[in-house]
Length: 482
Image 1 (cartoon, rainbow, N blue to C red):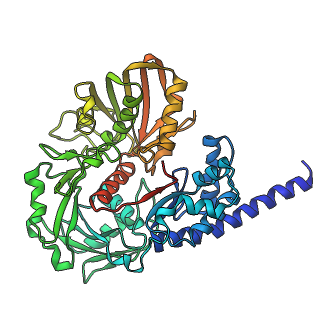
Image 2: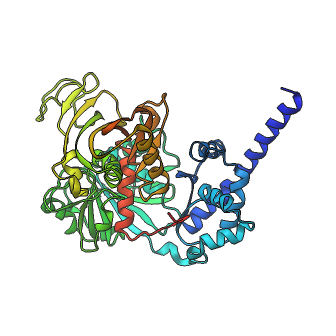
Image 3: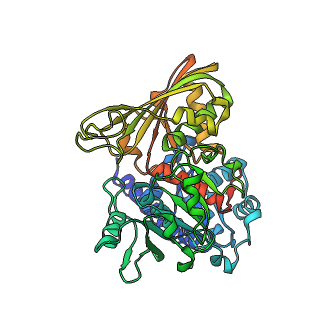
């Protein structure tokens, strides 16, 4: 390679770096001022580094067969920043590709036509319309929900984390809880600042003032004392799973609705966002976000049902160990779970197969399920062994699921990857409910085996926040239209 070619290659890289750097403040302004979330083929662009933005542009090669350049997307971001948009999700990658494919000449006219319904929809007083959220419990899921809610505060007009309710209150408690939020052995450091206000018993998280309330039961809490009203209480303790137990939250002043981060019992609706979330009504005061496994498998099962039909199947979950298990052998009320989690594979039961039918009734009586807990702290896998109504091939079913992950209403629930090198740790922090591993797919006529990875902590927490948004009437336009 000549020196000139070497120099040109490096110069091209520097130019693309400069455009990505210039894009970052515009993306941040759109998010903080207008609550506009920008993405690139489903990859979020808010709070990303220059290198991450450039890598995500290269990802488009896997989708469209050609790399998308920041030279294509930067002008789109510039135009968006001038349009005074209302809350929206805008995929600038798909807009750029659509603009090219249609052969349009005027980019601004194209963008204005695509986003017409959101132009000039931002109002200066929107920051006063946020919805109060309370986290009842502050364990693994509670802390991840706190991270996501703070990250998604945007311009402050959407969901606002106002309080955390925990037991305790001994000396040093606040500092320890702040430390657990700040540092996480699986998910890494919190991206921001946390200040502890010992006197007021509060945490200030990226400017969000979050009251820490010490209580042994919901009956001890009056949220209105802290200026919290009409709040959604997210119960992530798992202590109560029926209407009677969870109804204790509704008796608290300042609380109006409850969301459980576990499968609900009785008549409580178990919601998998993207599947049956449209069934949420204003009259539903108590809802369940189902389980992490149910959220991972149901979107994929829905996609397969829609195209091929499912006669019957078996779901085997290879699940990371959880806090419910013992570190070393000790008494446990459940079978086998008393054995040391870091040292053993542990066969245990899962209700995900039967729970799937609650979100997708067409599956009732068609699935069986079991689970194996394995010595990893996070990221699990569901193996779907299915007998279909209509046969398929590996290539056909993979192409279909890849397309669903990119161009359907399930694109936030289903991700797709096809690589011989990926392992579980590669999916830590993935925001989708489940990730189809195309390289592992098996198909033989009507018999299909699908392997679905899922971050059983973070991906699930993202699904919980999506339900919170729907419960709170936080609506986004999506562009380009699906």
